[in-house]
Length: 142
Image (cartoon, rainbow, N blue to C red; front, top):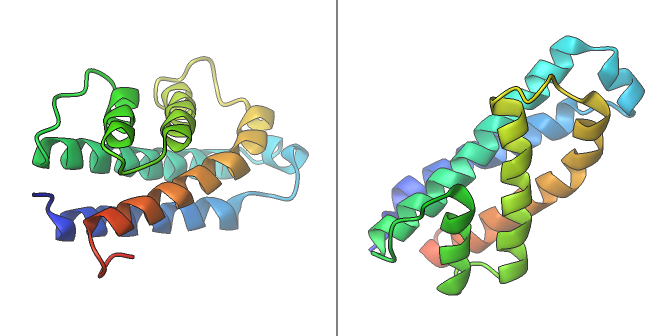
């Protein structure tokens, strides 16, 4: 059985960092390009939010004994296979993980234009994920 308290705590951290990204995202990519400190702050909060989403998926999969994912994307896939999240959401989360990989592993440097344009959809995906997971763990989380 999934540890609802742990999952809800992680969702709280995820939501807090999603909101930090929203507050810090400037009105344009030009403004983001000009502010390296803001780029770093956005990247760090996005990394934390996505990592919490991954951790939640892995906790649920392990607690429910649904297997051992071989990748972050497979963790979300297992949630979709067990009707915790929709297939489309699992696919979107896999794309958000790709953004995380670029930031975490420094594939080149931060592409401010790309980051700025990817944030709205990524944040909306993380919001939908948090709602779905809160529903799964029970009424106190919904």
